[in-house]
Amino acid sequence: MAQNSVRGPTVLITGCGVGGLGAALCNAFADSGYLIFAAARDPAKAGFLARAPSCQVIALDVTSKPSIDECVSKIRQKTQGRGLDVLVNNAGVGLTAPLLDTSMDDARRVFDVNVWGMLAVTQAFAPLLIEAKGTILNVSSIAGAVRLAWQGVYNSSKASMTWLSETLRMELAPLDVRVVTAMVGEVETGFYEHAAPFSLPASSYYKAVEATIRKQSTGELQVNNQKAEDVARSLVKEVTGGGSGQAWHGGLAGTVKYASWLVPTKIFEWLLHRNRGLSDLAGLKHSYGSQH
Image (tube, rainbow, N blue to C red):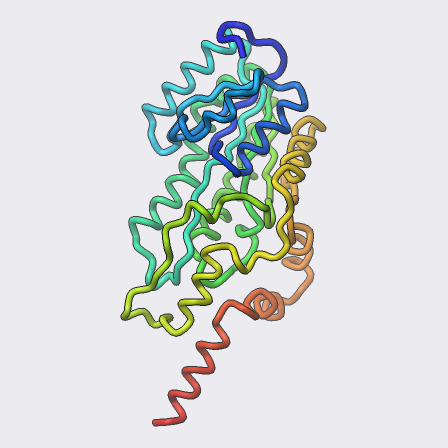
């Protein structure tokens, strides 16, 4: 894309990397005629996106105020005072671990990226979005709507992101900025490939089901993945079609949306945890207790 020529609507997408939903969103927005600013903490890892004539790769660490401020300055310059039409808060990190074994540093990192990073980027780009009467697409997850063992930190971060996003929707409506909260289900991406190798400390109360938790940490328990390209196209339609509020797309998204409202909590939790190792732990405890 020419550095000093901006025509058509613009979109900034955070968290763009190989094989991720961010990259798929770049392609989907490009197909809809947008000029894309693909943001990544390490631009070299998103360099493949720059081959498209409608895309520029830009550095952005959503946990760093100097990085955010520099990105705002660059976007303002590149859009030549026209504002920003769409902001996509897609950057996110995962964490799988029993809460009793979770590093507090790791837990804070998840919230710094998934929650406070989203809010910090939104605050910084708000003037550009207001100028353009734009739209924010916050990529949350169905994880924020369910309670799932071994994902307490990640799921609670997505729940927090969802509530912040829905509150932003109400607060920004009078300023003519729409907010779409994407409740994304299971998607075929490289999300789990970037996770650190999983292991539990020898002293963990959950050591007996470590192999099961490891399967969850690598995405092996996800069996309803939808293609990232299909989910991305659906989300772009939400933006271009004037939508706002929660938008449920991806594998199991519809199931979770309605089951979380209609199915009794105990039954829903049992359905979610049939293969998560909790019943195995309960059986081990019962067996151990009967021998003493």
